[in-house]
Image (cartoon, one colour):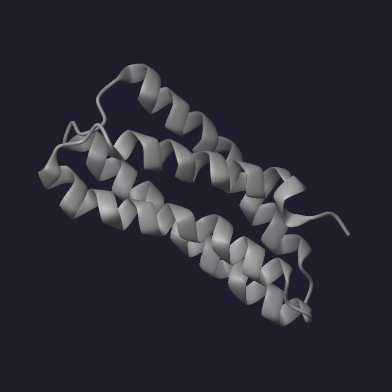
Length: 118
């Protein structure tokens, strides 16, 4: 079995959370204290729940954490939409960077969950 950190899905989740982590430093204090801390937690939770599920023994237990990961992914997307709508993230290249990761991570996450038979 591969190490979790070698899986594409995990790498994409880490890439997304790292991008958010470093962008946070450029945001206003208001944005950091409202959206910022929330989106850091939700985006970090995507990979963390993948890792926790991957380390579980039974398929139902694994799948539960993968579903938590998808919930965190959806929460992160909601925060990103707010950040873009409120012009916290306004650079077109930065928005495209987020969109590229999201468009790849979402389907891979769903496939990963569906592959886990219970």
